[in-house]
Image 1 (cartoon, rainbow, N blue to C red):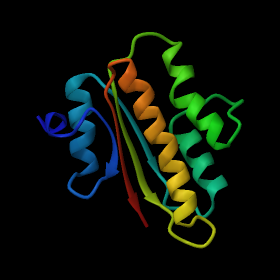
Image 2 (image 1 turned 180 degrees about the horizontal axis):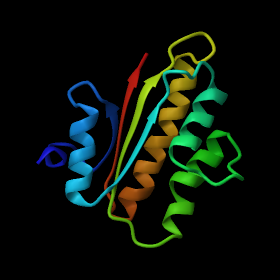
Image 3 (image 1 turned 90 degrees about the vertical axis):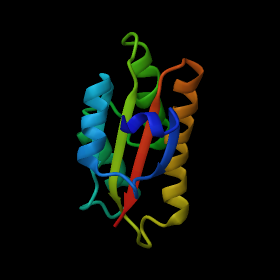
Image 4 (image 1 turned 135 degrees about the vertical axis):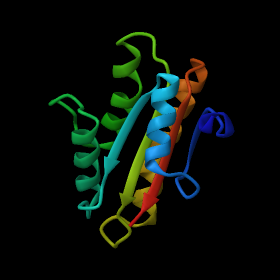
Length: 131
């Protein structure tokens, strides 16, 4: 099975994987599949709004990195036992309005979320690609 070859709590490039295969693997293991196509995003705000919309965050989502972390951890944790997560952030921008530093800050939130879930023995795998 595809997910057996990927560490259970990791943030990595999607290079070797196809979105369809990750979806199928998540479904096959009963894990949540969260997908955001960020092709239209140009700035940090655009990225956060795109993720919030794709992941169906609550209307009160603060559209900042702290709020993103809260939605990916506490909010979900409080809703009950979780089977695991496969997260795909496709086509993150690569431009002056969303530069390497902004991308790393965003990915750090997902790395922190992976650590949060690892402490609870819940797999959290995040895959990303750039435009």
